[in-house]
Length: 437
Image (cartoon, rainbow, N blue to C red):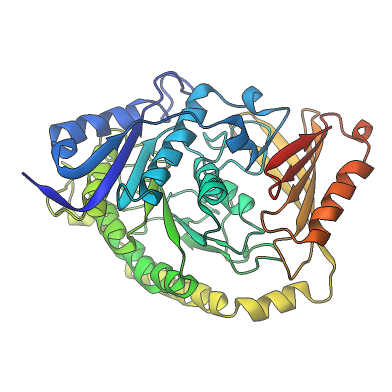
């Protein structure tokens, strides 16, 4: 009988009743082939590997993270609540000390869902990891948390949610946004004025191979984590960097994913993308499970694997080395760079257009943030869509100082709801409440 070196909790939720369409790559078979492989390999019979059942997250769990327009249940299904609840179950198993690591193999995914939700983006309605992380903080105390997003697509939703949060380090390695949806995730996306430097992107060139991903891990991700010293490391475990994925252009393998997780050692992994349903996902997920449990994964191989399929050109390797050096240097200089970025400004604003590819709508945001040295600050967003929706969303951070909290409530009280067709929202994370008028 095999025994896991580390106790591992697994949560499976295929979401049988949710798919964008019967033939869409984001469908239940993504997990069913994995579950078949896990059962065939007898992984759930290994001593120290435990399966947990998901439960529903609550609307309050979602509202702790998102402003859904017009409300939560108009934007999601029960499957989304179960996927988020499955991630919460995985986290609780770790934080209660029942297991050492946990992997939530759930869908629908979430890392493209931003603070304001007008619909689905990149197959995501609500942000599974963020809901889990804020549940952890609400129920288990303040934590410094690092999110390492290894999905091939930039996690622009996770970036947006934690743009102003210095207690959450967001690191994303992904295919360059000039070549892939959502077209973001560049080096200059460095965080908001009160968390400048805590948002780090490494946009890798197409055809990055095994060598490039693991180089980025060793020479960028692990050194940054050693500096940040998080209480928890979360892996947004996207698997669409695989060489067989139908919608990306990378060259990673199941063996590479296993080695990455073996070195990264995340406390909790949450499944994100990955659409090579038969050729990749069963093998990648088994490799990750074995690596997290401290078991031998050397025999995990795709049927069509060859070293040529995960190779990269010397040019790609040289580019990644320069990219890692430049981004790590910026991380080391983040305090000085923040001074330069903020200067004497009292407020900093930005204007963005956000495309909802699934919904076919365009959102325009006017965002303003109070510069504050005491907390994550106060942010408000005037949000319009080309379908006529118009809201004001005010965000009071979890660690808000009295000034920022008072100004947030004063703004909410002062602005007339007549000016905003779909209302004014105030997300007060100190009170753990969402107000609307």
